[in-house]
Image (tube, rainbow, N blue to C red; front, side, top):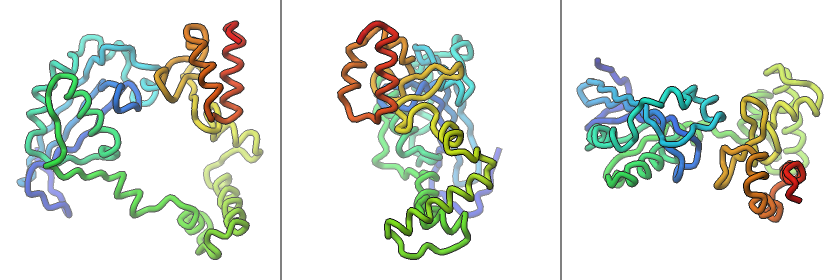
Length: 256
């Protein structure tokens, strides 16, 4: 298999990485699938794809995103078993991907460290297409006004003018994407559980933690097993809608 790059000029191998994991914590979550597409300067392409048993249950929320379940990896090797081949596949190559700088690379560094392999990026180029996207296609109010309203934003950073622009953009978005017209229904569409995103919902509808040591665990389960943690959460700076969820879970578990 070969590929003809039209614009990138490679001087050594470039490994394009994509990981599927048990969650989004780069320090503690584990790989369930790794795919590497290594492209050489002559156009030769070498793929590397492995399913991985993470040694823990895959949260339903993660499975809903990447489609990989516990049953899918039940017979797969642990990361330690594939690590030597993966490490060898990445030797001497630069790294690329979408979001690799802040996610895939840190996850790989931590996974390799657990099995005693020092995966380093200091001597590599790391090319993150997401970083390029964010730099070249800014997602700010000026860009939104231009995209949705076909106009240039004047009086930039004048609070009242910016509020008007935000309202106009939102109004156009409702029509463009067929979103609910009532604020209450639109809120329900845009906010999975709470406004600050401290919680999300499993496919079955139960709220689960989106932060901290119980990330991916159901709020009701934590309330029953570790009510002290929820009482700690109540003292933190979360928004009132998230705190109301926590209080409700504590009361339902009898742990006021």
